[in-house]
Amino acid sequence: MRNLQQVDIVDILHKDHIFEKLSQTADKLQIETYLVGGYVRDLFLNRPTNDIDVVVIGSGIEFAKSFTDTLEKGAHLSIFRNFGTAQVKWHHYEIEFVGARKESYSHDSRKPIVEDGTLEDDQNRRDFTINALAVSLTPLNFGKLIDPFGGIQDLQDGIIRTPLDPNITFSDDPLRMLRCIRFSAQLNFRIYDETFEALTQNKERIKIISAERIIDELNKIMLSPRPSIGFVELHRCGLLEIILPEVAKLDIVETRNGKSHKNNFYHSLEVLDNAAKKTNNLWLRWAALLHDIGKPKSKQWDPLTGWTFHNHNFLGEKMLRPLFRRLKLPLDERLKYVSKLVGLHMRPIVMSDDIVTDSAVRRLLFEAGKDIDDLMLLCEADITSKNEQRKRNFLQNFQLVRQKLIDIEEKDRIRNFQPPVTGNEIMKLFNLGPCQEIGSLKSSLKDAILDGVIPNEHDAALEYILKKAAEMGLQRTK
Image (cartoon, rainbow, N blue to C red; front, top):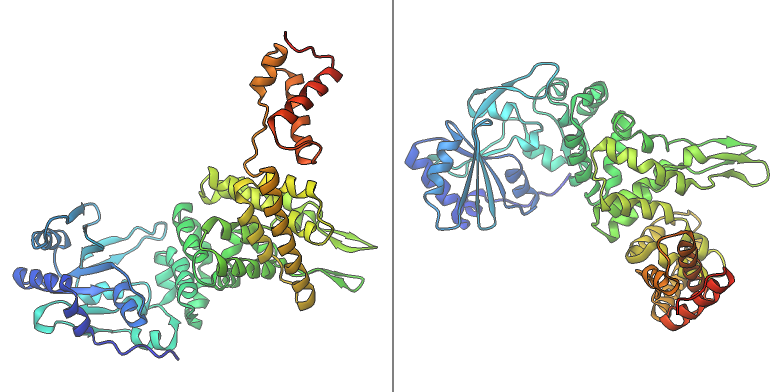
């Protein structure tokens, strides 16, 4: 049971003049007008929001036009006639207007046939009881709560439940299944048993939903306080296997000769939650969830050492582009960022369990570049050992690695490394165009700096290039 704050709705509405203006418009037009959905829910949960949804018994567009006329300068009205909706942006407010409606669906589409309706019709079409709450803005009964499905009690009990038959609710619009799990994750609410059973029964219907809609909900789950809640529920009802099979396949434990490997699904969720405690970076959170997806393909049994997952980080990195493409995730710098973190996530862990050489630190700095701090955060989140002493040792060693990174960077300036002697300068030195020899000299120079053979300075680099070029038989231009 949750202790909902005592909410005096009338008092809250009177304190914000935007609701007074809405009420005045309702009175002027003689139209029943209601606050609905998430704004009302969040009043009771004490979750501040400036996104306001208004339902009118009539034309939402005409109401929005009249309401906009009551506002001072700066109000921006957008009308979406195809959907019968309008939006007003004013200062920090975003207010959506729609006429009350009832909906019916065909089996092969989530786009409803829409008709004008009553407030009751509009509440019936809502996805969950906690989103079916309405508050009157009509002057005659201003501030009255209309709660036909026990939404306030469900808020009190922390339950996600559909107003009507959940099988119809989810079959009509399968996106509601992901919204159900998203609200469960965001609010830390339990999904009602009958509602959860309908998720399981209707999971295949998710296939008619576009990847863009799916990823929008997945990202919201990913950004929730404890993302693991959502991914456990996605897996438990069978949706995860359909939309993100690479993660679902991690849920397996094999035992041979009495030796078992850990469950990499629940390990990945623990890493995700650990990262979520430290960062709201969506793409770092994606890297945390996906960092071990290469393990099923790399798993092997070694009679001497037991289960191994050699090169799982590189296999996982290769799996990311097709995964991002399928989910309509961006294929730009954000994919490169996640790929880099997944590909490199074993490096600091190996370094922390061994003597850290300057050369290893330089190479890690070179490859991670500006993302070195995020990589270290991911690797620290990846320490989920149940052996507390081993965990403490790892984290202490990570602090040594972090200090080494700072020291090497101050001395050698490797982060965002650019060679002190450029390819163009080398070509001018030897009067050459682009060729294999130039590439070989550049590569040799980079290795010499990263291995600490020479300092990251122009004069030392030039001397090194001239020496290597002479060994290759190249003559400097006079």
